[in-house]
Picture 1: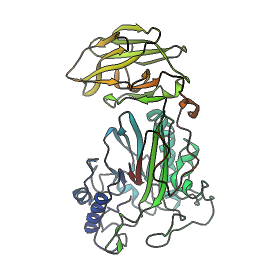
Picture 2 (picture 1 turned 45 degrees about the vertical axis):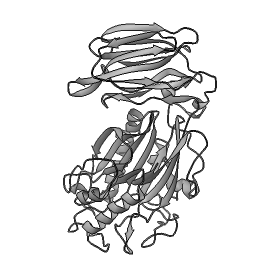
Picture 3 (picture 1 turned 90 degrees about the vertical axis):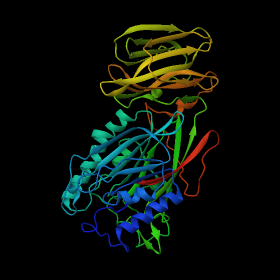
Picture 4 (picture 1 turned 60 degrees about the vertical axis):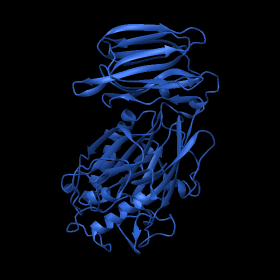
Length: 459
């Protein structure tokens, strides 16, 4: 939701009421409606008021008002394990004062439940329709997909579910906009496009402009968008809605953007699960999920360590081997026998050079055998596989050592059909129907995450 938080002297927005009062009402509405996740843009000089009246337990710290901050913040029921702010490489003042603030996007890895993470991006691109604006905005989206998400999603979110929220300042009907890169580069689905039948408006067609005030339906196009790509470990689907519940009070609108609500539901695969992540969000992202065979079985594990956990390898019975971290330390190996699998891994972590890393790992099998490496610390936890599951892969972040680590578990029966839905290493299997009326999706272990636009999530 764009909360129109630029100082009134710079951008009065033309809405009734003063901005401080309107922001107070927005914060109160956010608390009252209690969406799972809310992403906001233009949260600048009235940020303190917004947070004063909102009650979400997890909220990003402001990056500052104009001209210091990006205006991008998140208010959430759910905590996250990683957060970054990235500035656009290019801006334009051709018709708007976009260079007045460091616009860009934020990235966070949100923990919805044990072992269930969704990578979320909140963005705000260059505004205006002058040639300089179009060049800057195309650069923003190209940067997101060439430097950060084709690359950013590929390098930071491989095999993860991803949701992108934002004030894109773009329309499908505007030929000079490259908004379609969101779908062509990484296979994201626009929740609004799905809700209106699955076909985006044609480039060059007349703009489908929304009427003044609150639209009576979602058939008109707005620049605020939510896009998503699931994986088959956590299959999510979204329903798009215009939402006036957080933007109207005392009979008038509170901001010049209507928030977009998307209700997401997710279903966990019956064949695979993940543990939580342990350690710190540093180093290079890795995820073995997309490389698992259809019925994975662990043959052996090797841990390397001395003062810390330097690295490790998992060898599957299929011949596939996963190696992460560095080559330092001493190697300790454990071969698994018939019917044997790793049921738990104890990890300990601590600080090295100002960053949190894993210092110790001990893997234990269902037959009581174990292997360990590194040194214990005062901060430890044990990841335990669900009944009937065993470790077959890992995910996390690494470098010369292991910064962050979680485990992928497979069920022991041959019912693992999950990989059939995972194409070429990541993020596909987008549901074909997104129904504006649905609230709960699919049977099995599931939940819903309503989200609003730039926006809100209800989970």
